[in-house]
Image 1 (cartoon, one colour):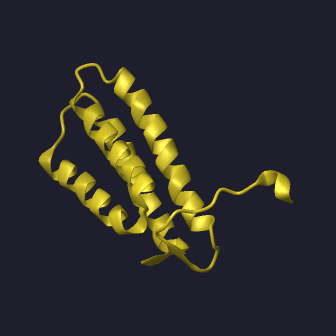
Image 2 (cartoon, rainbow, N blue to C red):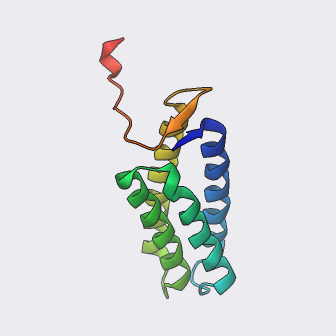
Length: 116
């Protein structure tokens, strides 16, 4: 299935807001409604991402849940920051793979910066 770059960037915006909210709730427990929002976000990313990229998304959502339930959220906050940064990179890479065109959910070949 193909997805437009705009759809991927909209999903990135949604992910960013959820990660910000999870950070704000660090150590306060995971509200069931917010957990459902995280799970829904992950479900919406499933058709947009390939297998390895989907694992990155699942790791980021799991890190967000871990931050909220941790008694001492300092280490989980670092893990969330790294997972969020990686997921942001994945979504941006997919969105920029073919600007203005639909983006396939399959793997994207890495760009060779020396080929220019």
